[in-house]
Length: 424
Image 1 (cartoon, rainbow, N blue to C red):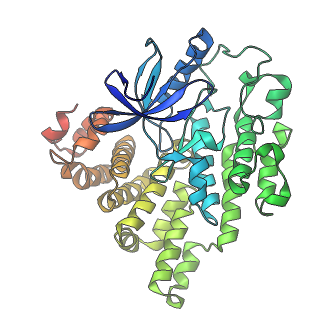
Image 2: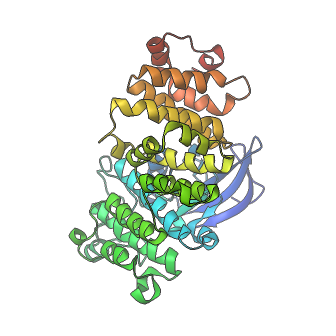
Image 3: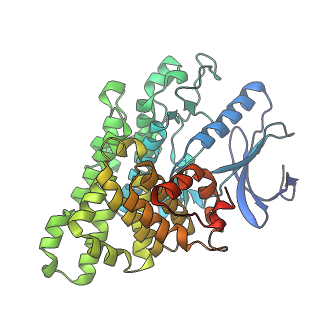
């Protein structure tokens, strides 16, 4: 493939990447940009690996995933088409100053935690395989990825180790046994990624002399040669990094901030208030801060300006999509305030991607938990405001949630607008 070629209606406009297994091109179709990835080698093992990568990308859902749209594995040069991102973490890290790098690394770890929660081991985590779109972390390049419950066959032969030096866990390269990689193997790789992003140095040469003293113990624990001595899941790693960040930034809790509101300017209060929500580590903590602040004050924060709303929305979406963590504590009484926050943010944000995510969250939580008041609010403040033009971005949300929307109709006794039902 080369620039100017047309593949299944996709016009190749630029080559944007190249790896050992294939190339990545910027392509255009119907005035929209996409990324097209090819499989250069035609042997059975490479094709099977390429198809598995596509299958994993299809399975992985949430804020950290990259949407895949099309594929042809029987083409002369097999390919699949996916969402276009802005750059990799390798380039993006140079834009980050101070603690912003650590904040973004926490996002990366949360993305990997979500990956593991969905039964996927990556096996090749590094900055080059983390992409960024509109500031949001996206995990990609699952060429070595494995579905824990489904991949019963081994593509790579025994004793053959694939991956990147400095990131491969010792138990893999010593035993030559990639198929038994688990969460802790990815945690070892994350330690290398964290070191690399913060220092700019290849993690084959990890040294405490080039890294901040407060974060080095976290990296060291990730990269312990003994898997049992590492963090046993990525959530433990996230907690450790969040603790480092909170100590660095002089984090105060919501109650303390409110008690000292008269001692600071309104702008300083706003900045600290936003920081508390942005540094929140779980949806449970987000809701707790919301209750402490109060509904009216939170609405004033959301409507302060679009930038504030957009930041709050990204954090709220990220935490809400962490299903595995939320299922452990979420109760029926949490759903009404959760959906109220969802509706407030939906109205205030100016980013269509966030609006799509928020609409899905509001519909799924309100109906799945059978909360009449929450369903009523989502219907009145989100669904009822769609018109023939504004509804277009939400077509996939409607199609994917048809059963829930029909359930909402019966639950609250409303008739879904025809502009919605036409996309069932």
